[in-house]
Image: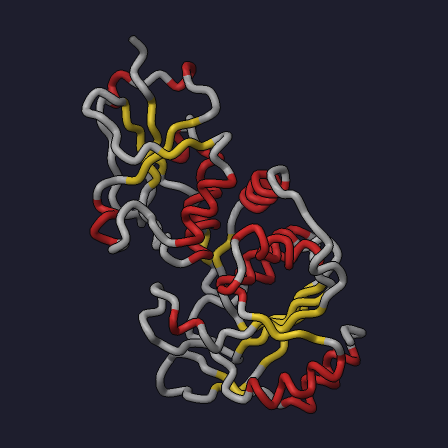
Length: 289
């Protein structure tokens, strides 16, 4: 009887949606390659019966799991957040979740995607972005609900997400005043967390304009086909700041950045205030409205 080969995805801060996709799910492209087996900064590397592993025998659908350490890390069991479950459901034809490997199974660690820091952003091999695009795009059934729409994505509920634990970060403090001007130009405000994963992809794929504070949701810029991205961020931010411009550059998505003002510079959480008149003029100058 052939033993199952199961690939254990190493923990890479996967409760944050950006890390989940760009470090863990994109790392599925390394399955079966020794180059993706171990890395420097993961959590919970796990293998068993690895001496019996023969990479020449593996074929899709690939069995995947998560090491036992993740039960402690993510309080909701085996990657139980909504976007985790939605992701695994979309790709289940190629990557099949095994929740409880047996002692007889061959388990091989999968570290995921390597990061190349330049001091400002997470730089990845461009094939990383292309892999993610193809993996999900091939499984999507797009509709026209968001065709040519213009959206402002609010972060002002983001502190309610479990990964943020109540902390208000990178929120726009004069958002209401800004939105009163944006809606005059046909721009709708949405909260991305209100949408399913498929809907998020569809929003970015079909809309003509996305305006958003720096946020993990901007990873869906990967799927922009006809739209443009405007990212709001403070100068010299506390956190990495160029990861979304990197995505747009590689995927050939028109990208603009507008600098806001730090509302609380001493705290390091980069909440912001925007000069509304200056921003509206910026949008007009760049033919975005």
